[in-house]
Length: 321
Image (cartoon, rainbow, N blue to C red; front, side, top):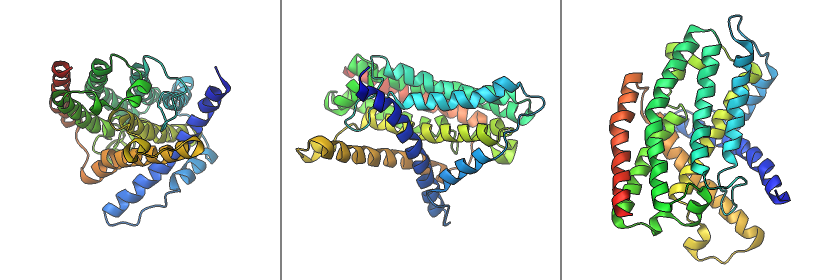
């Protein structure tokens, strides 16, 4: 492992935590504006984490203590690891390999499982109901998410995100397959708020129904770790969609001949802008526009409608490729 790789392995997660909190603040601010409210300042998520870290961490009497305390750490660790597989602008991912997309799918699932296990381990009926809902929802949206990954594997004959980022998918597929890729993009956009537990798919944490569900008994440092994990996962999910569907560099679009620091800076800002646009479309606009679904409605949406869209896209890619 080179010194450059070691530096990126430390810098990427730290940058991901910072950007995740910034994007969370932007999301809350714009969502408030869309509903004619002023909203909190963009720095509010940083204050939230700071206050949680200063508060007492309480473990319920009926909880399985070691499991209850381990799950926030596992969720946060998996979200940080997720960032190591995502190329950042023109920078390659520190842990690039041939099975990136498979590992990413595993890490996303691991975060949801950690929250569900933590809910079951808390001994609270609210948390148990929330964990059950999370398991049902996870089994519903993982199928279209896996279908998207299989679709890209058919096109590139590889699961490597670096390979996908180096050659935009729209430039190598036929018109028929391109329409299939577009359907996969629609399916992934629909999956995103569910993967991030945002409205209208925040059914497992519905505060008005089950008092925050899986997180009902969490406080202090443990809740801060779940909060950070959620922020990082939101940024990472949008970044993955950018790498898969819109990896175009600004230099190639405008014909710029940049080198050195200027190249990295410009492409990094361009990458962050694309991530922000995807984040606002897939999370902010959706959660501001819809009310919370029931668990049976959410399951039906993914198992029937989103699955059909994703499978149709996969079929068109298979025929086109």
